[in-house]
Image 1 (spheres, one colour):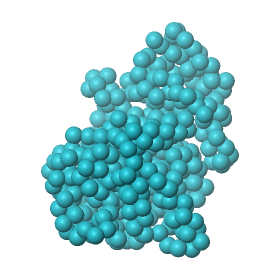
Image 2 (cartoon, helix red, strand yellow; image 1 turned 90 degrees about the vertical axis):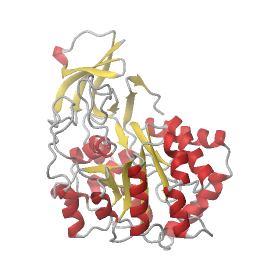
Image 3 (cartoon, helix red, strand yellow; image 1 turned 45 degrees about the vertical axis):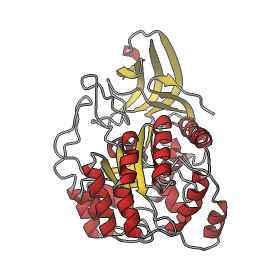
Image 4 (spheres, helix red, strand yellow; image 1 turned 120 degrees about the vertical axis):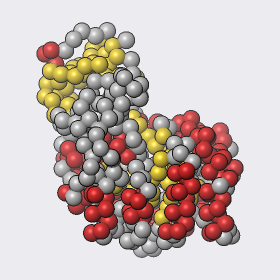
Length: 410
């Protein structure tokens, strides 16, 4: 079954050439994109969708979420809005609620959050464990997550549970807990921050997870300058997330990690050279915690690859709206619209190692629109992507295709 999407006013490919096509068309065959070009040259297809002069983007790639949870933290939010500062300890509230909730209910809640995200244009999702914090519940969270999202990250090193010795818990994270979650996860993460895991503990977690064959990510530099960024670069982590407080040395280290990388991957194949560590900015979280916004402009100008993600979680960023993150990045982080859209699509794919892939290797790329890539598409109810920032707060998602399948839009 093939579908022609035509009469596209603006098509942002986010491919290697950063093309913006006018009066364009796209053909989907099955789950893949099979043709892109001028609408006047479009081939025939089994069915046609006339966009009516709307803009088409890749689907959002949300590379940082925490969707496997139960409970409510509105009281914490109200206290923070009244002037209390954010600390990592609130995670414990969610841990208690999550542990006491059934598998069925946790799955139902997570599926609802995924559906909400997809209805707003998100077509590829990562989520983490981290609200179980014992062997049984971390494994349960990983198993449930593997049934509802595209990428699962092990975050047993989210917080040391009350009453446990931090060194003993770190040993648990690096040993029995890691073994229990390993069948369900591709990535591992550590919250390297005051009130969570220190440098030595974070190093132990990263090394154990690397030895287990997992890709690495780091929560770093959220509440102040610290070792998170440097550890992420040292271990070759795919991303370091939050990055609110960066020294000049941190920015230099992130930029240097990309110095040998050739991002021009041609028709969707592997880019040349060694890839670096993506800096993932979480602007919705920054607003909620009243932290300084991550220095996205400075990171881009230094040559660092940037991602935007929602950080959807119950304590500090209870939103799945990637459009909100894009709008904030434009209005308050000084990114251009096209830079912000790229960070929320291709950047997220790069942070998850899914920016490349084609018909030859069988692993379809996401986050960009190119022949052979997965047909993840987001049609705006606007003639250009500029409207995402020009009309802040207005729901602009008109249609969504995920792996070639039209999705329900609320």
